[in-house]
Image 1: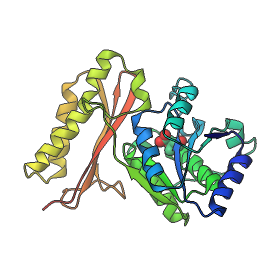
Image 2: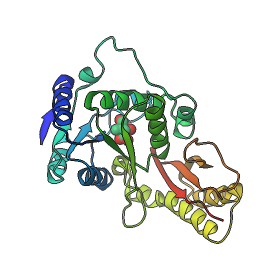
Image 3: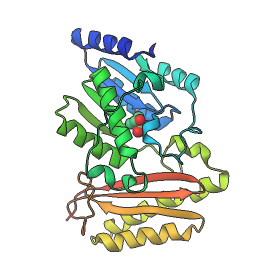
Image 4: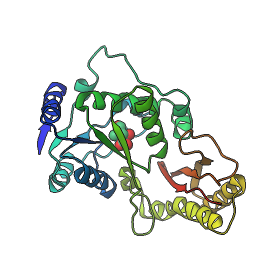
Length: 283
Ligand code: PAF
C-alpha cells in the first residue's frame, strides 16, 4: 500500500490509475478504523480495480466544543488493517495540505445540511461536504463508499454530487453492528461499560419501531412516540432527536407506506451516538 501525504502526489497517482483504464474506488475515513470501515473497503475491493482509502480527521466538521482533539487517532493500526484488506493507496494528508493558509472556499448543500445532525451540529455538514468535495477533486474516483450509519451525510453527499454534476457514483453500504446490536462507531471507545450498556437503547428503539411496522402500524407519529418511550426508559441517556423522514429529502413523513428513514441521535454520557434504520415501502 502506497501512502501519500501530499495532495499533488495523490492527484498524480490517481490520474495514472484512470489513464491506465482502471476503475478507482475511494473510501474516505477519519481513521480509527473498525469493521464498518472495513466493510466499505471490501465493497470497493469487490467493485474496483484500484482502491484508495483516505484518513483525515477533518477539523472543519467539528464544532468548537466537540471532540476534535480527543478523536481517536490510531494510524499505525489503521495502516495494518488497510494493508490486510489489500488497499492499494492511502491518502493521509496534514491539515496544512488540505487547508492551506488562505483557503476560503466551502461547499455547502443548503437545506439538507440544516436537518437532523445539522440542526444540533451547526456547520458540521458544511465541513463534511467541503472535505469530501476536495477529496473527490484530488482523487477523481469512479466510485466512493460511505456508511449508511451516517444516513444524513449519505443523503447530503448524494445531493452534492448530483448538484455539482460530479461524475462519481456514491455507494452507501449497510450498517455494521456489534453482536448485541450497537452500531459500530469510532466513538464507541469513549463509552464506559455502563454507558456501553445504556447505548443499546438506540438500537432497541429502532427495533421497536420496526416490529410495530411489521405488525401493521403506518402512522409515523405513533411510531416515533413508541421509539421515544424506549429511549426514555434509559434515564441517563439524553435524546438529541428521533425522526422519521424521507431518506432523500430528510423531511418528516406522516406515514411510512412509501418507505422512510428512522434516524436517532442521543448523548450517552458526553458521547453523541447516532443510528438509523431504513423502512422499505410497504402496503
Ligand atoms: O464519515 C466520516 O468518517 C467523515 O464524515 C468523512 C466522510 C470521512 C469526511 O470527513
